[in-house]
Length: 250
Length: 274
Image 1 (cartoon, chains in turn orange, green):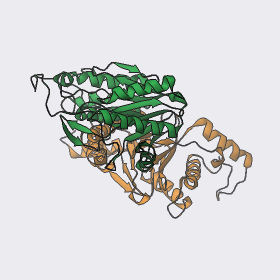
Image 2 (cartoon, each protein chain N blue to C red):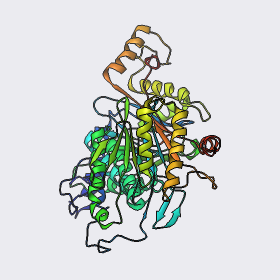
Image 3 (cartoon, each protein chain N blue to C red):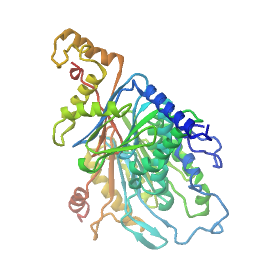
Image 4 (tube, helix red, strand yellow):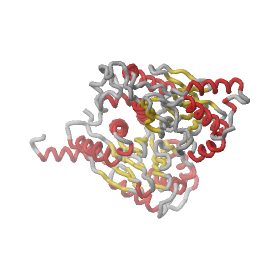
């Protein structure tokens, strides 16, 4: 295979298709920088997707839980050894992503002789104020996507752009606080996971079936587990779990 | 092989890594935190080794108050009057250090990182027993330095246990016991220990019934008394505007008492001469 470039390229294409198909049904993770810190939200069915990584840092992943656990273990070790041997302030998500994660993901993706890593990763680092917050996405092929105010970790570029557009349209225009942003994130996830018809709405978004809307709102919280997390600017050594309000899902 | 398999632990002192145990991870990346080897001093200790302290912890109505003086000495020299000997551990516990600062501060760092690493990797808080064992293991690993006479550490560890806060004191070998009402450590501790025992037994109020202000004042007076008798206890007020470090751990909070509050109390209630 490796003597024939075409076959290698073909194998890479097939690998990309396979990973995309595996990631296809992943629920996105939303991340928004607010006055209080960085807030992340998603739903999961079986295993959590958002984790505390280090002081000031959070990790989220969509993909295979076992791959997420391997990457999480690798980054946890890297961050804690670096932070202990040097200083916690020397640990940054930029270094973790550039030197610890991206090269390994790229290597794993291009080595067609080993099983692929089915995972897209989001790293968040809270700064002293919202302008210093950083959000980095590392995709399964090692590419890095950088943002600061808000982002969406999704299965692929299309769904990321689509959900980001929805989120951007609903978010307040200036830096804002947690209480204003969290309901918006809940609503975006609700609209991403269920079609207008399932939510009792017509194609323009008008409510046409109230009972269906209530039923769908109850379904999302019974079938899935809400994950809301605040990486607190004032207390960045420990993430805070945020409960959901059923009123967001109507 | 999965490219993200955890770092190899082979070659370390511990052949089977313990999940979430940071010292095992560190051993795979660096030399032993507390190496044991041939004697550096012939067993006589180093004349200039830094030590000398008074640390104390006692229960009061809200939780546990932990206080320490600020002085580090080497033989008869004052090396510093600004040492913080009451270390915050993972924002939920306190380590009051007495003995060799080099070893004690390193133990504090390892303990702090260990509790965070455990919580983040295992997705659960480590138990109180687990915390006590990590510190005991660190002290045990430090035994060669302790018997050399240059690295002995005898800390107090104060941590939450559900809705209560508990005080533990350690010896240099890692044995630990609960100080039910109070514990003290360091060269200035005998006087403090006697006073605390007396007050708790025959004082107007038991230690546990003291208010926050009363507990604060008592801790300042105890440290001032210790510094009167023990030359290695200092940095507790007086000519320089340096005051003890006082931290308060309750079941729901961890506060550091502000220098301004201590200074005001010191001037009005401790400096007063009959």
